[in-house]
Image (tube, rainbow, N blue to C red; front, side, top):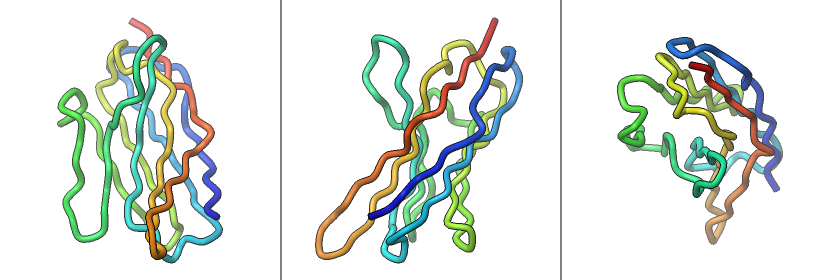
Length: 118
């Protein structure tokens, strides 16, 4: 099992910045992908950014140039730096981890609210 603890959400004005963190613990040795998803009210959960071993990070078109995903392997933590925030970025943000151990296993964080006021 993998446990995920998220932090860093909150309320910010448009144009501001926030940094989300997600610390993983447990069976972390075989984690290959760490990512952030978000879900706004009445909408489907969508991928925001992902980082996978051996590959370049990928981002949703709506956040390219504004958000940066990074990973600290020593701390087993993934970050999402969010700059130039817009009201449409308001959502619950979820950490996502996938590990491979003779099969793919997926884990989700509890979610952290990000609210951007206009």
